[in-house]
Structure formats: structure tokens, C-alpha cells
Amino acid sequence: MTTGHVILDTDHERLVGLIDQLSASIIEGKSKIACAELLDGIIQHAKVHFAFEEQLMVEQCYPKADQHAIEHARLIRQAVRYMVKFNANCPESHIPLIHFPEDWLTFHILTADKELAEFLSAPF
Ligand SMILES: [Fe+2]
Ligand SMILES: [Fe+2]
Image 1 (tube, rainbow, N blue to C red):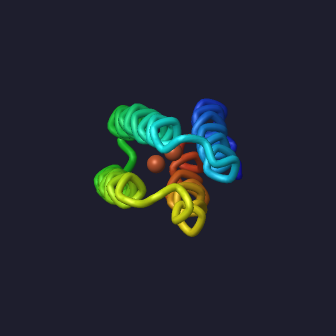
Image 2: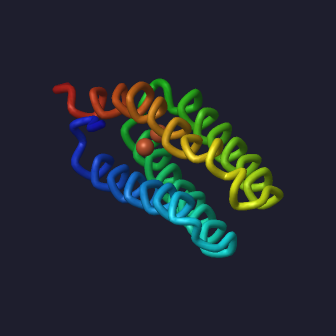
Image 3: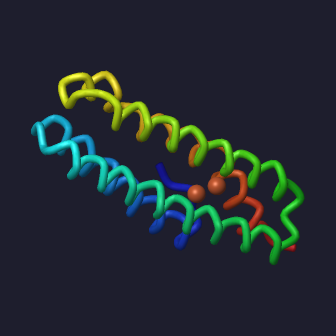
């Protein structure tokens, strides 16, 4: 799941690592507080990462910057809604929710971020 941009890929790897940690914690039946903390960490890390990409897009005059930023805002809203749902349910019911964080981010990385990385690496 790489875009070819070293900084973006490193950041995505960190996010995916946190998501894997959350999935493992849910499967292992870790406490709701521990899972909620991990989920909160994912959202906080995503916010920092999205802000970095948005700054980069403005600096590099990326033509799809607005559209990409709107997608980031939508992803954060989805993640917050997911967290509310996650917090409201008992640990056993978390299993059906386990794939959300991965699905949530994968599509964005493989489409919008990949397109951004291609723009950044294109010769002028
Ligand atoms: Fe990204
Ligand atoms: Fe992005």
C-alpha cells in the first residue's frame, strides 16, 4: 500500500501499525478503555498527517488540494462516528467493527494519496 512518496509512506505505515494494534487488541479482548485510547491515537495521528498533506498541497500548488482536503474532513467525521459507535457497544460486538479503520484509510491512500504522490514526483 505504497504511494512512492517516502514521507507519506512512512506516515501511512505508522497509521497502519496503530490500526493493526487496535485490531489485535479487539481480538485479544483488551479492555474497552485500552481500545478507545488506541482509536483516539489513530484519529489524532490521522489529523496531524492530514494537516501535513494539506500544507504540502498548498505549498506545491496541487490543483486538487481542496477536493483532497474535503476528503480528509470526511474521513475524520467517519472516524469520529465510528468511535462513538465503538464506545457505545460492548467488547464482543466490536468484532464486526474491526475492519472499519483499515477500510477507512486504505481506499484514500490507494486513490487520492497516490495521485498526490504522483503529482509531487512529476518533473516540471
Ligand atoms: Fe495520507
Ligand atoms: Fe490524503
